[in-house]
Image (cartoon, rainbow, N blue to C red; front, side, top):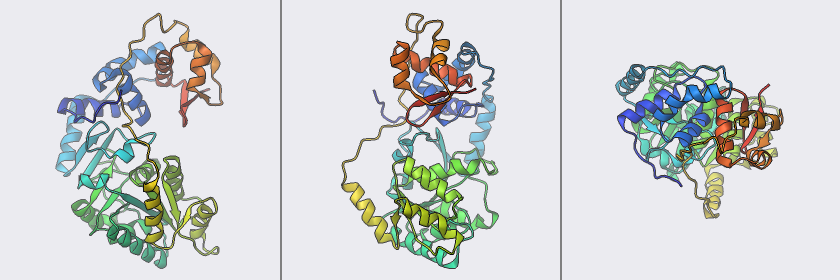
Length: 373
């Protein structure tokens, strides 16, 4: 049964951050733990035993509570706030993706996160025409009532943000909300935090590294109803964002360019694969308006606590070995596992959680599992 969004207490917020900051606990595993145990505090207490039962060698050691309290104090000093996945202010579109960040950190106007929005991304070394077009489309989208989302990178991102400052823009960044990257965007980032919103899932003070950017990209697409790509090489972060958008069920738009320009090969390829050819904001508004006319599925929050107590009768002692025998390198559906092993779905999910904590299985899209060799 789905639970209505509820604010976290101060104690619960610390519990959540302790679990989030525990090594090996990523966004998906965090949600599974809360759904299994009901609270972060209960999950933290259960982690060591769960891993031991599955024969794991990973050590789940959460940071001390005073470390988390210091992080929250630094967040407050930076003018930021924290929004948990279970809370009313957490944006529904982002909550509906496969791996939403359990906690968002924000400077600025949190109400912008729930407004209709379109992401604009593209080349850092964008052409003058590309930057001009990004700004024009961003301004037109703002006039049409859309918030512009981007990643505050050089080139296309910066141009889109700058021309959407008056109508509303959200910058999803790879480092902490108090860290400016690239350095020349200090003024722009501060202006966005004043009139729009800057968001991140990283702790304050975090300097962005290469591994942070793909995670940042899923925030850009996850917050948006569609993603527009303007100038992107065949191997670029913008194409990662467009791929994530497709996986999340969002529209992908692309501006065509000269086949002689390497910066346009990625966007031209997107159009070849079915992205909507885009020349102005009107193309985007028209497509999204048609999308709104279609029957919409009601999206539930990605976290629905359903504590389950597994008894010896429902979980045989050999359950771990039994499930491992059924798994291989090729991903297998969880529903198929339930049928094959003749255990209840709750018991199978419990055993899979323990095996995941032990590092013995890997989860894949479509509720599928494979064995880690």
